[in-house]
Image: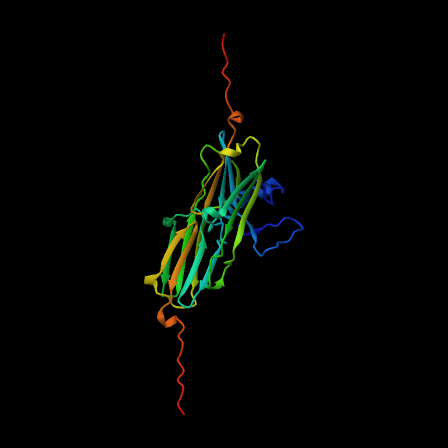
Length: 124
Length: 143
């Protein structure tokens, strides 16, 4: 999980690392489903933005410890971030997301008109 | 399945292919996610341990304190595919994770508390009074 991703040839302005969380992607006739591990992120610290066909998921994780002395591990604040290109068959107005036990599920339903349907043949 | 030995003569390799297959299976069955993120921090009164366990339920976590100074945590998660969905990406991995930590101070196991919130397990271990720092009063001698 701890793969830090910066765009090439850029540097961070703030000392707030980006972490690429693992993502599962599923699809059926009705929707595209993204499942993202985002432990330690409050629901209001997650933003899901869609701009044309670019879906950006960011989760801001606050520092885990206050005044305590860190013996080992990394308690610093960081951002989870993933960016995906989604097909234009997605209806951006109907995107829904749930957060449960640190796992984010984003459901991207297809447009009604782009759903598969079977054509009935009229026998005469 | 390709193995480094696939390119050799089939007759030479055939007796071994079963061995390779089993080795390969054992390799793939290695518990993954061994690097669950753990943070251990300390205040004068307590030690706090935090572990990232996204998607793990209380029932799949075991926490033991031995001899007031060792804490053992075991956590498990299984990732199942979604019924009725095609899978495009499967980066999230299941794990069976277990670690023991020797703490830098003796703790009171009876007052240890653990909470699971937003996929993070937080264990608070209160230090025993004898492990807490004590300020020594300096007596000024009257001349």
